[in-house]
Image (tube, rainbow, N blue to C red; front, side):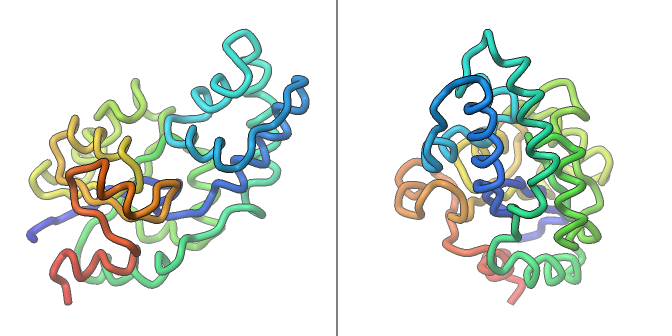
Length: 214
């Protein structure tokens, strides 16, 4: 497959951030007087950004206050609770060494994203990292993808989008990119196979083989 670049989603694709997000959401819900969700319910609401997550948990009337609480707590705790997913650290250098240009498009705030990628020592593999605060509209709108393509100077046909959930398929489809999912996020492999029409891999390390690099 003759791709020149790959755009990765962040949470559930590159990093396991669910415990970090859940911890901050639980603290937020406690501070506004609500019973925190369990981890599985939190996972089902990750992917559309902090605003969507927090509003889903506390409601629109308390959203502004709750977002401030969440950002404060997440900023203080995210590094201790966020980890690279299996095989990511070994696979990214292989992809870069093959000549592929790598980027990240995430609905996580850019400041948190850059902080985490640097802490986990994988920031050097990505030529472009964008969050929702860098464009007019978050994913699944294609603003982030279009901006990355322009910065990398590659076409839609030359770029693959890699994510972990149906939202990523929608993002890639709206942007006109081929899409590949890895079953490393909140959706099990059999569920993804049933729900999406794009290829699904069980592990991140399978990406080079999928790209026929081996």
